[in-house]
Image 1 (cartoon, rainbow, N blue to C red):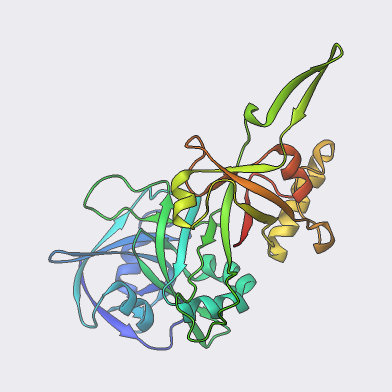
Image 2: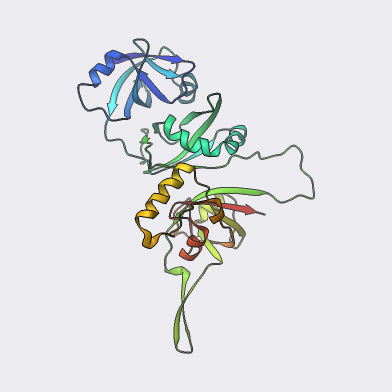
Length: 317
């Protein structure tokens, strides 16, 4: 089926609107809450999402900022195909497109976390997309990676964002401040990493006067060498680690999960800011840690109050 694409101003979502004639055709079969659609024009291909909105014309309508991000021009004629069984993303890593976008995001981090899943349905690596904040500010992101991971093919590998998808945001800081005092050589970098389950390397078995004990290593954490290089960490460097501040909705969800399993009620979920801790540890490098992850002992994880979810590394040189 061929349809024309119209770029519309005033739309604040990355979901497209479909003409009634196309909607009626689609309604002959099962329609999921979010439908993945492929638009193709000659050699160009776009993966977009539809969640039920009808266009005001016989064309497919798309937000102006979103069209600019994905390179879809006004009046483009496309072939439309429904994509079924699209993988559901468990983790998506994104980066603000510019330093200005990052600074806006820092002031609206909690709002952005909830709005991404409301405004964006489908992403793929190297894709750009806008996010509307407060109905007036637009922040642009670049998708760095997705999980499930992209196969080694030339075709785009889109994934669908769902309520359980975790979105990790990499910082985008200004590289060369115009004014910098010569006696201030300290910089602070914040990195959001997923927590990987620990293994027996954190446990040292000790025999003291016939008494066998397990001594837990809590003065260091492990990173993959490529993760350390990417964020300019070095082996044996001191860092501060703290749990990621969760949104109110996420806290409620985690609190409900804990209530259902009281025998493990203190398994690392934050209930309020008073439970937030920080620790100073050394960085150790190991290729057995997944890229973009941090491995720490269970004792540290419980003290920090974080599950196998994510925590924030704060590096101070």
